[in-house]
Image (cartoon, rainbow, N blue to C red; front, side):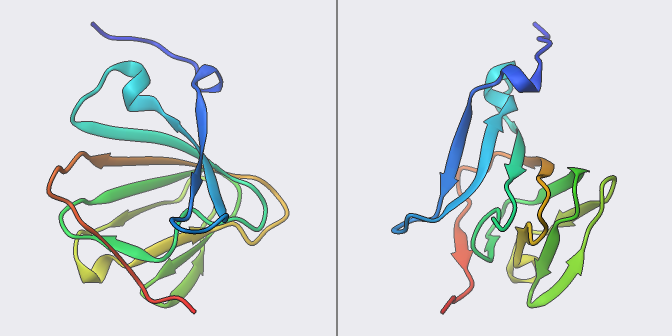
Length: 129
């Protein structure tokens, strides 16, 4: 059965870097709340000076990101660009899809992230200092 939700009412969790105290974004898992099993959709809030993750790519999962609010910087295989509210970007699976989104501004950034759940997906991280 279809379900209508209000994003503001969905429980949020802080995404954290593995083996670190660094907090990435605040996530609301919309798929779980709505009851979707194959489509993964979440609303992410990046506080000022926070990033969504470490630079990475997925072995088999594609990702789509739509900027709802703010001006995030996007890291694409070492190249940095600025996105604006209303912009969208897709990340292909594989090494050509290395990416990271960062909020370098003093304003909150809000993102809608969509992907397909992939049980056999592996995440590979870009070496960081």
